[in-house]
Image (tube, rainbow, N blue to C red; front, top):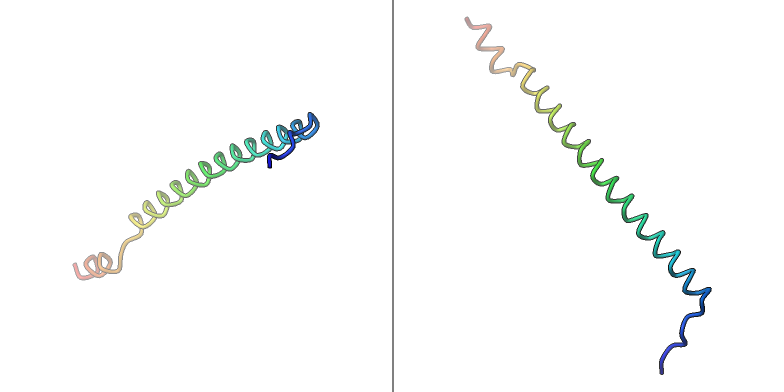
Length: 65
């Protein structure tokens, strides 16, 4: 048994729901890209900070000179 065809009103509501879903998908993609960029910047900052802070080993070597 085939389902009854959609009415124009149902088709319009379905089209609107599809538009909303596509817009939400696009926003989610944008947010994901932004989060990735923020994470990359944070990782770079952590790496640069780690390089700038002298390690215990380097401090001990400097103190023994």
